[in-house]
Length: 349
Image (cartoon, rainbow, N blue to C red; front, side, top):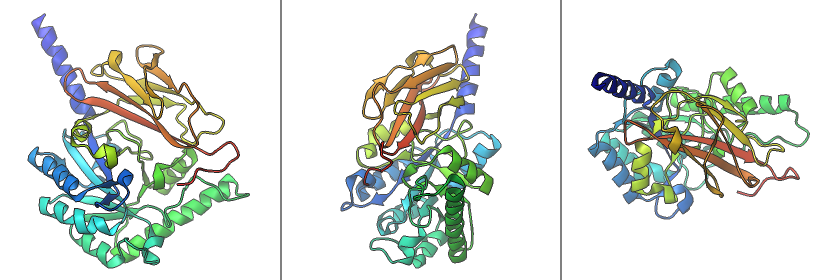
C-alpha cells in the first residue's frame, strides 16, 4: 500500500511538472498620474520586480515561452515573462531602469500611428531603439491600436481580413525597418479577437496574445496566449503572488469558444480536461459581473459553464480555477467574450 501511495504521489508530481507554466504579466502604465484601471505606481512595480528577484523566479524573454509552447516542451516552475502594451513614455522612465537593474528582459507591444504622429506621453523611435539595445523586444500592437474585429460599413469577411492583414504587415514592416528585426507576435488591442482573426494570424505565421488571465503552457493556443493584467485592483501583491504560482489548465478541448458573441448573450462553454492532479470537486468558475458559479459536469472529464444573465455589450469573461492536489498552486483558465449592442453599435471606450 505504501509503495502504491508513493507511486501515485510521484505520478501526481510529474503531472504538475508537465503542466508547469509560464506566467505572462501585462502592464500598461507605470505611473502615479495615469488611469488607475491601467496603471501600477512606480513603487508597486519596484516591489513586484523585487519579489521576483528575491524569490528566484526565472524571468525569460516572451519568445522562450512561445517556443516552449510551440514545441510542447517543459516550462520550469516559476517562469515569468513581462510585457507592456502601447508604448507609454512612463514605462521607459519608471519601469525600464528597474528591469535593467534586475537584468529582466521584456516585450513592449507598440502601435505605429501614435509614434508617427508624436502623440503626447508616447515613446518615439529613438527611445524604442535605446530600450531595444538594453533588453527590450519591440512587437506588434497593430498600426493604430484598432478594434481589429470590427468591420467597416458594407465590408464582408474577406475584405475585412485582407484589411487587417495589411494593417499588421504594415506595422511589422515599420518595426523591422526601425529596429532591424521582426518577431511576428501580436498583442490584440483591447484583447479582442475572434476565430476568423485567429485563423488568419495562424496563416500569417503570427502568435496572438490576449488580455485574458491564466498561465501559459502546453495547453495554450498560440493564437490566444493568456496574460495576467497587472493594474488597479489586480496590482495587489497578495493577489499577484497567487497568480505567479498558477498552473496551466489542462484543457484539451473547448466547444463554444468563439469569442465574438453573435446572438449568444449567454454563451455555453464546454471544457474537456485531462490528468489527475486537478481537483474537479473544487473547480469553480466566475462570470464577470455575476459572481461565482459551479460548473455542470457532463462526465469525469468535461464540464459546461453558462452565465445566468445575458452578458453585456463590450468585453467580459468566464474565469475558472481549481486547486492542485499536489502543490499549493491553482489551475487557471479564462475565456474572453466580446459583443456589439443589439443594433450593431459598440460601447464607447
